[in-house]
Image 1: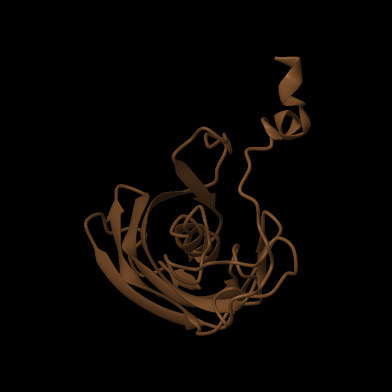
Image 2: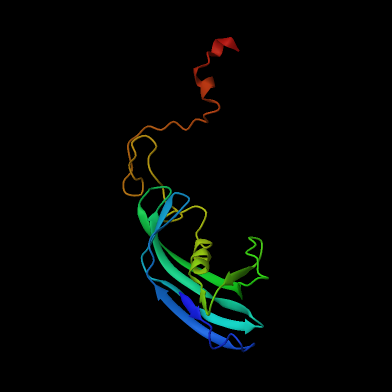
Length: 171
């Protein structure tokens, strides 16, 4: 996902539209595997603002991952926004992690890392296949979305479980 800015690098105010579609390998984020079901898409434009290149656009992809409750695979549609400022790396540019600008060399801007970041920001904190996912039985492990189990579950607060065995005569 590279944008060639050769024709606009010496023309402040010029705009260049871009549109990409690329197959990407699976990603692991925090122990969770995300497999790209569709190609990652990015579209938008680059604007030259006195050697600062503003990239603005949208990103899309569909990923497959496992539900945190029932462990079944499901697909998740991601739609992100891309808004970055790129500048040439020269003697004055320091690759400061706190800087909002991204440095590049030559006449090509590689936007792939920022496209991936924009999609990762759209991943929900809790990955569930549906809001009403019932998960797995804690005793037998059966998927409660598929079939109910016959396990006897006592709903006791574990902090108070010690009181269950306490003899009533000792009060």
